[in-house]
Length: 108
Image 1 (cartoon, rainbow, N blue to C red):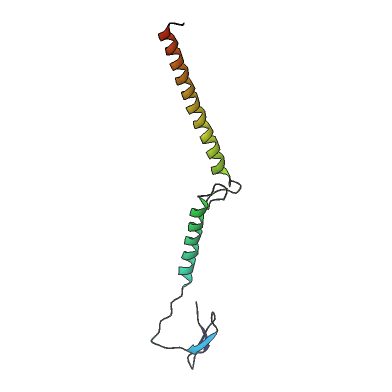
Image 2: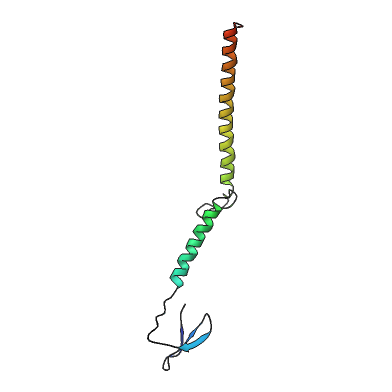
């Protein structure tokens, strides 16, 4: 946000954002908000990345191109692995129970 000095000898300035011509005063201070806007844009990108991290099909900020579905596939493989492990453990436990029952009944 900068001011354009139209006539410095009569202290006329113009705001390029609003196109307002006004008198330049000594008692007012004007700060440039450009660095603040740059930081806000960076924070907006980080917030957008945080929201994208909740969806497995959207790309993350620091990921390589083409890795949009990585979280989705990792979830499928992880759940399949744990499903197989739990299924085998349950089947083994069931087989052990059946084997022990047959031993107790004397049917071996």
